[in-house]
Image (cartoon, rainbow, N blue to C red; front, side, top):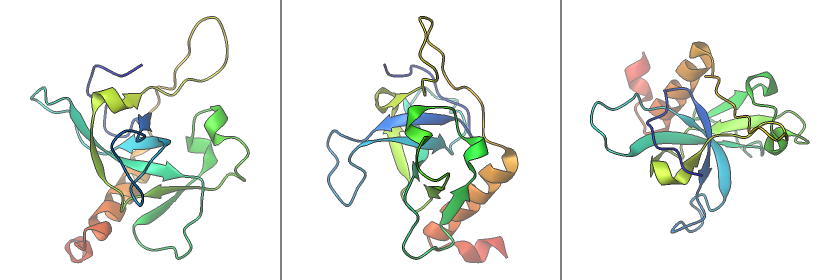
Length: 140
Protein backbone atom coordinates (compact mmCIF):
# COMPACT_ATOMS: atom_id res chain seq x y z
CA UNK A 1 0.00 0.00 0.00
CA UNK A 2 1.48 3.31 -1.07
CA UNK A 3 2.17 6.17 1.29
CA UNK A 4 0.23 9.41 0.90
CA UNK A 5 2.57 11.78 2.73
CA UNK A 6 6.09 13.09 2.31
CA UNK A 7 8.26 10.99 4.63
CA UNK A 8 10.81 12.63 6.89
CA UNK A 9 14.45 12.86 5.89
CA UNK A 10 16.16 9.78 7.31
CA UNK A 11 13.08 7.55 7.13
CA UNK A 12 13.54 4.00 5.92
CA UNK A 13 10.87 2.65 3.54
CA UNK A 14 10.38 -0.04 0.91
CA UNK A 15 10.45 1.09 -2.72
CA UNK A 16 9.00 -0.83 -5.65
CA UNK A 17 11.36 -0.51 -8.59
CA UNK A 18 9.68 -3.31 -10.58
CA UNK A 19 7.73 -1.12 -13.04
CA UNK A 20 9.39 0.80 -15.89
CA UNK A 21 12.97 0.24 -14.72
CA UNK A 22 15.52 -1.91 -16.57
CA UNK A 23 18.97 -3.16 -15.54
CA UNK A 24 21.42 -1.72 -14.61
CA UNK A 25 18.76 0.36 -12.77
CA UNK A 26 17.09 -1.12 -9.70
CA UNK A 27 14.47 -3.65 -10.78
CA UNK A 28 13.01 -5.10 -7.57
CA UNK A 29 11.56 -4.10 -4.24
CA UNK A 30 14.26 -2.71 -2.04
CA UNK A 31 14.60 -0.77 1.20
CA UNK A 32 15.54 2.87 0.76
CA UNK A 33 16.45 5.85 2.90
CA UNK A 34 14.78 9.19 2.24
CA UNK A 35 17.37 11.95 1.76
CA UNK A 36 15.15 14.85 0.70
CA UNK A 37 13.50 17.17 3.21
CA UNK A 38 9.75 17.54 3.30
CA UNK A 39 8.60 19.69 0.44
CA UNK A 40 6.50 22.79 1.04
CA UNK A 41 4.76 22.04 -2.23
CA UNK A 42 2.78 18.86 -2.66
CA UNK A 43 4.89 17.35 -5.43
CA UNK A 44 4.22 13.72 -4.54
CA UNK A 45 7.94 13.00 -4.97
CA UNK A 46 10.89 12.40 -2.69
CA UNK A 47 14.55 11.51 -3.18
CA UNK A 48 15.84 8.16 -1.93
CA UNK A 49 18.97 5.99 -1.97
CA UNK A 50 18.71 2.19 -1.83
CA UNK A 51 20.08 -0.26 0.71
CA UNK A 52 21.76 -3.43 -0.58
CA UNK A 53 22.70 -6.71 1.09
CA UNK A 54 25.67 -7.16 -1.25
CA UNK A 55 29.05 -5.67 -0.47
CA UNK A 56 30.41 -3.65 -3.41
CA UNK A 57 33.25 -5.33 -5.32
CA UNK A 58 35.26 -2.14 -4.92
CA UNK A 59 34.26 0.01 -1.94
CA UNK A 60 34.23 3.69 -2.91
CA UNK A 61 33.34 6.96 -1.18
CA UNK A 62 29.73 6.67 -2.37
CA UNK A 63 29.23 3.38 -0.51
CA UNK A 64 28.19 3.63 3.14
CA UNK A 65 28.19 0.55 5.34
CA UNK A 66 25.21 0.45 7.66
CA UNK A 67 25.20 -1.52 10.90
CA UNK A 68 22.33 -3.98 11.31
CA UNK A 69 21.44 -2.28 14.61
CA UNK A 70 19.99 0.61 12.62
CA UNK A 71 17.72 -1.64 10.59
CA UNK A 72 14.15 -2.72 11.35
CA UNK A 73 13.34 -6.26 12.52
CA UNK A 74 11.95 -7.20 9.12
CA UNK A 75 12.32 -10.45 7.13
CA UNK A 76 14.24 -8.56 4.41
CA UNK A 77 17.07 -7.84 6.83
CA UNK A 78 17.51 -11.36 8.18
CA UNK A 79 20.07 -13.88 7.00
CA UNK A 80 22.50 -11.55 5.24
CA UNK A 81 25.48 -11.75 7.63
CA UNK A 82 24.62 -8.31 9.04
CA UNK A 83 26.30 -6.54 6.12
CA UNK A 84 24.28 -3.83 4.45
CA UNK A 85 25.35 -1.03 2.17
CA UNK A 86 23.72 2.24 1.19
CA UNK A 87 24.34 2.79 -2.52
CA UNK A 88 24.62 6.57 -2.58
CA UNK A 89 25.43 6.57 -6.30
CA UNK A 90 21.95 5.26 -7.12
CA UNK A 91 19.89 8.34 -6.32
CA UNK A 92 16.22 8.19 -7.27
CA UNK A 93 13.43 10.75 -7.24
CA UNK A 94 10.36 8.56 -6.86
CA UNK A 95 6.63 9.10 -6.54
CA UNK A 96 4.86 8.17 -3.33
CA UNK A 97 2.99 5.34 -5.08
CA UNK A 98 6.31 3.43 -5.24
CA UNK A 99 6.92 3.77 -1.48
CA UNK A 100 5.55 1.75 1.39
CA UNK A 101 6.21 1.50 5.12
CA UNK A 102 8.32 -1.45 6.30
CA UNK A 103 6.12 -3.99 8.03
CA UNK A 104 7.55 -5.54 11.18
CA UNK A 105 6.16 -8.55 12.99
CA UNK A 106 3.32 -10.80 12.04
CA UNK A 107 0.26 -10.10 14.11
CA UNK A 108 -3.39 -9.26 13.62
CA UNK A 109 -2.56 -5.59 14.05
CA UNK A 110 -0.21 -4.28 11.42
CA UNK A 111 3.02 -2.89 12.83
CA UNK A 112 5.30 -0.64 10.84
CA UNK A 113 8.83 0.60 11.34
CA UNK A 114 8.81 4.35 11.95
CA UNK A 115 12.25 5.22 13.34
CA UNK A 116 14.62 7.64 11.66
CA UNK A 117 18.25 6.76 11.12
CA UNK A 118 20.68 8.68 13.36
CA UNK A 119 21.83 12.09 12.13
CA UNK A 120 25.49 10.93 12.04
CA UNK A 121 24.58 8.13 9.62
CA UNK A 122 22.44 10.49 7.54
CA UNK A 123 25.43 12.86 7.33
CA UNK A 124 27.63 9.99 6.02
CA UNK A 125 24.98 9.13 3.43
CA UNK A 126 24.75 12.77 2.37
CA UNK A 127 28.54 12.83 1.93
CA UNK A 128 28.28 9.65 -0.13
CA UNK A 129 25.70 11.30 -2.40
CA UNK A 130 27.95 14.35 -2.82
CA UNK A 131 30.88 12.09 -3.80
CA UNK A 132 28.65 10.14 -6.21
CA UNK A 133 27.93 13.25 -8.28
CA UNK A 134 31.61 14.18 -8.43
CA UNK A 135 31.32 17.08 -6.01
CA UNK A 136 33.54 15.73 -3.22
CA UNK A 137 35.73 18.82 -3.53
CA UNK A 138 32.88 20.79 -1.88
CA UNK A 139 33.47 18.89 1.36
CA UNK A 140 37.02 20.22 1.86
